[in-house]
Image (tube, rainbow, N blue to C red; front, side, top):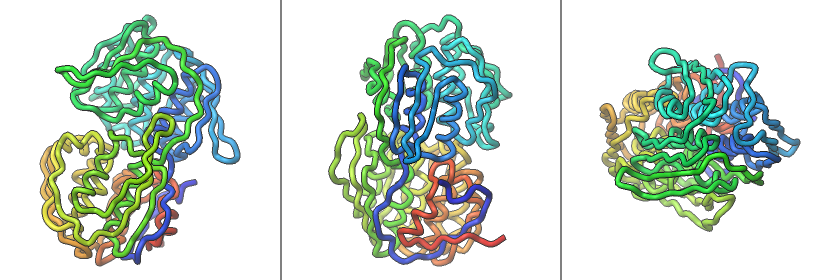
Length: 450
């Protein structure tokens, strides 16, 4: 359940040590994919640990609209009775994907090679995000797409009546583009191949294998090539969703900057294509241990132990790391502010087309808190002021962006003066229960009376 179902302002104040076990919700990326692939399977797939944030709930509702039966029992276990590859029914209403770029792009791919028509829309933020990057390859399969100017939502897609397999090179490393192409390829006869210049999140490939799809991967001169042969019969699965590293980033980073903190995050997804933040924090000198690595449902999970670190230092984050930590840069910028020395990040232009212009939003906040920051089209420099030296004492705008809201609240927990976030409601899209979880660890986060 979410902390709030309405717009509300919250204030984070300097807190005592954070202590305890951090049971963050299931991974959002894996939750989306488990629902979609379950809907493309003949038979019943069960899912434990599904993230019940609004983004994923919107995906569940979309799968119902395409004909799958999706249900939740009293103890939080989900079941999906699918319609099989190519079995999607034509929705009777517009598919609303809310705030989720992952949902809309993957679902568009999953239906683009079935001869049905569907219209997709989102909230104000999602409707301004670029969709051409997915529309372009889907048209190669034979789908017809009608979009708003600049290829933005709302978009109507008429799926291919005689889909053709494609061989597509992505213009940027993107798990969403890659996944959309692979999902479209499921209902196209023959081999579909997608090549990405650098490896992005591989949850789709891992989960396709789990459902019985033969996936071929190889490194080529053009980049990493992923191929599948279309029209397989997916096998129902019992999925256990690991905890989300992008959500865990917030209590982990809070523990690193609040004196005497010690937290443990059990069962966290440490897939190598998602572990860029943990590696960067260790390079900054964080007291962070990864223990008991194991394989669960095709994903690598581990237990993370984190202690406050008083001597964090600035580092240079290599651009090739962007693809495995793109969602964690806002909270990394907070840690960089409390470190000593400069943190340099490059290749981060994608931050400007997320739920908000995250680079601009966090630059504005950090500068208002007395931190020297410089940024360009795809680079970011933050000169840390050291532990306990961030001034705080300001009102932050969330810009309908859950990660901006959570990053600002975490910063307020270690700043000299409180930080208020104007609207924390967007947090429910990805991390329902965030405020309660942080309070249980010892964080001072309070609702602001209007």
